[in-house]
Image: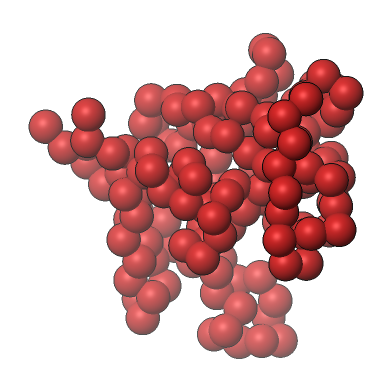
Length: 140
C-alpha cells in the first residue's frame, strides 16, 4: 500500500527576485546520536549527493575527526573538504530514514537533498506552476 503523499509549498527565498525565488525547501528533522534538529533542505534533482553544511553537523553533535570516509564534491564546493555522515531523517509523519550526507566544511551553502540517497528514499512530484510539491516514501 502506498503511503499518502504530503504536500508542501515552495518557499520564497528572496523577495526581490519575485517568482524566481520560490524554491522547494523541505522542512525535516535530522537526528544523530540522541540530538535532533529541525531544518529545511533544498530539494535539488540536479545534485548527485546530499550536502550538509558544517555548522549543522556540529549542532547535531558530530565530530569532524571521527568521520573518516572522504567525499569529493564538485562545482562551487570542490575546494571544501567533505566527509560522509549518516543521519536519521524524518519528513512529516513518515517513518525516519537513514540519509547519507556529504558533510562539508562549507557553511555558506544550503542543506541540499540530492539523488544519493534522498531521491532514492522518497518520491517527489513538483507542480512548479502551482508552487507546491508532493512527497512520499518509496514503496517497500
